[in-house]
Image 1 (cartoon, helix red, strand yellow):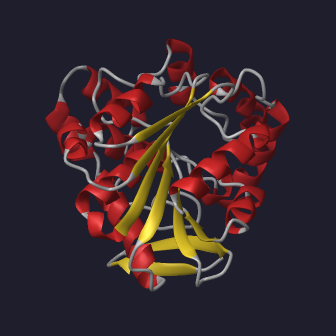
Image 2 (image 1 turned 135 degrees about the vertical axis):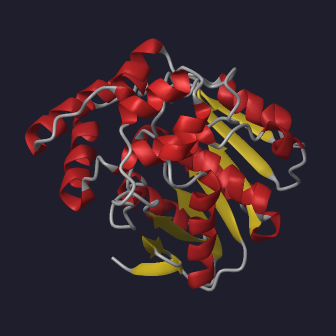
Amino acid sequence: MPIVDVSPGVSIAYDTFGDRRAAPVLLVMGFGAQLIAWHEDFCRALADRGRYVIRYDNRDCGLSTKFHDHPVDTGRLIAAVSSGDIPTALAMVPYRLQDMADDGLGLLTALGVERAHVVGTSMGGMIAQTMAISQPSRVLTLTSMMSSTGEGEYGQPSPEARAVLFGPKPADREGYIAAADRELVWASKRYGDAAVLRELAARSYDRGHYPAGVGRQLGAMVLSGSRAEALRELRVPTLVMHGLDDTLIDPSGGRRTAELVPGATLLLIPDMGHDRPRELWPEIIDAVATHTS
């Protein structure tokens, strides 16, 4: 797995699919998830549509740089945010979504890619939006998938999904894998598959399990504020994709994103939750390929 320095003190692990001469597509993963959550078969199928596909581990995840020197107690962070003690919360978190966006853009620079199509899912959609806002000249198109705008009124999880997201996970491998079944709460009602969730959990645990990173990523996500005003000014061609079964980021998050970005296309997908079930890959890949053509 290649790893490159993208800024002082930050190295990013990545891999690629397809012809380097093809149109580059940068895939940005979400909260706590490694690059392998973009399944290899998905990446190959997109590459087969004439794209140079790049997937990578965000900081504090997988094989990329870990911020060990800045421990964050997730419970204390959530309590501070919930009580409105934002200064305390801000002091706990060493980076923001902008820093994570800069990592992705730095990876493109390291690969010699000046401009790319950027596709982000969940927190990765927030990172992708931030890339397009901060450096629109480097983003050919934006695809924001199952994400939101940073406004508290939109895209909120159901109580059940929130409980699973913030609930404790077993530290041992067997328990961690078994606990993946809980994520069916936000999966596609039709295509959600516990075996698929357990398989990814096993691969993730073995490759680079790092629970200490999730508190910092969570802080970056919730403390970066609303992107609403910046999205209103965005002039990057934008596709917003959201599953109607999504209970982790309610579809209102996608609708609001498309409402704000001038000229954005909104694709609401029945039978998709906060996941990308293989059965829906043809529709998802076709939408991305069309948007990036």
